[in-house]
Image (cartoon, rainbow over all chains, first blue to last red; front, side):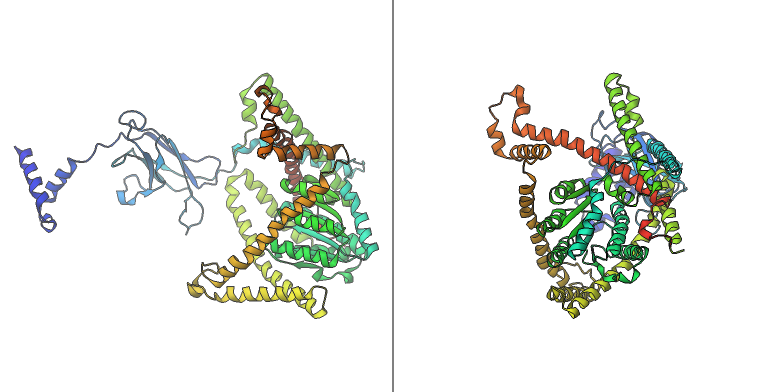
Length: 413
Length: 224
């Protein structure tokens, strides 16, 4: 009888104009709406929230078991959403969305942020948080139990890079050992590099011809290791150039690189005992636009016709444009880069090319200082260790197929 | 002292960066170092701009070869600086970004700088042709191998390569030129690239150690 009365009231209400609805008993109205709500899915089970390992304390790892209606049951779960609050019994309005909608079948989410306190992604360290997981269907949802408190904490060691640490330790031991051997006066043999041995000859040629030497540091920033290696070579080249009293031109792509290069060349001229010959404008800024830089340097090449060109550093598509122009004007060209894609261009267009690591070692070759040679010798031995490890790992996988061989070399950053 | 201070800065920052790789707790310190670098680099832009102006004014004053180009350079530099600083034609006024669509700065970039850059880039096609002509001469064994490999890959990437060897039976499919080209790229070529990459990685570690330990300091000049 009560149900019949309720249905009658609902029908009458449905035909009433909207302003009149406000006068109806709201409890009665809620009852009538609840009747039509779809059935929520089963909530996700066994929710856990733990500090994410191997990170900087700005992430929490949340895991859960799939809702019983995800792949089984009603199969109507379309995804999951993670909520976070600062108190277990926080009101619904205080729970914030920690994730977008994650696809059905997902059982893990890493909620991460950064340390910028005013930023939108700020994630506090060592602070209690509570999490809950929503299972969503097309028109309703269910909520898991609340888990927490959990804190994101700094991890002072990343266990995923243990193998790298071991290798670096081995490398340091090898370096220290060979440096000590070199300091004792033992002569260390390292294979000669044709490109390096040609440096003196190339600068000498420029001197004889009365033409400048052009040194290009590439498009890298001062923080790139190839550019840093190039600074070291520039120092040796500039010293020789100063001794031979040949003009030097260093067009730069980056202002910061230019300032470091100016200091390097100035110091080299002082070392050569010719500080007065140093012209600050010989190291100059062209532009930070790639092809405008190419146009500028090509113009310099065609006008000045340098006898010797050095291309040492980080290069991209401009490598061949520069090297071919140099080849056309008949310069001796020595190139070196760690950009594998550009190496073939340099090999084709230049007289000598330093391949990858040879660029880093070039300044050592030029100085021939025993201590520096020790580091190169250590590098050679490390290379032998790497090759040996690869072969041993390959054989171990092929012959005994041990899983731990695969996992021992895994690195997760 | 002029050498010691830069070396101390380099060793300290370098050590922090290395430790941050192994210790996530130090990542924020590492980020601080990167921001510091960016701040210093910003100041270097003023030095770059002033150097550019000084060098080109000198070229014009001395009537060095190609001094006319220096006038163009200075004009372009001044024009872009003026338009960029005062946001001329910017639909959002002085508050808008210089690269706002419709601003004069953006228009000049889009219709002058970008096409000129594309023109320079397109020259690469002709340079590749002239470089290939020089490189692909069978002067010795290595050059001959290079020539043959390049020829196979060139053919393998075209329809002609497929047509030429389509008669080869499936059990000898490796001899089909497209498959041969794929084999060259994925086996000998990739192996060589990986060998170079391993060398580069070790070289980076070695170079970094030399710098952090202060063994390599040639870029700072000698002690004298």
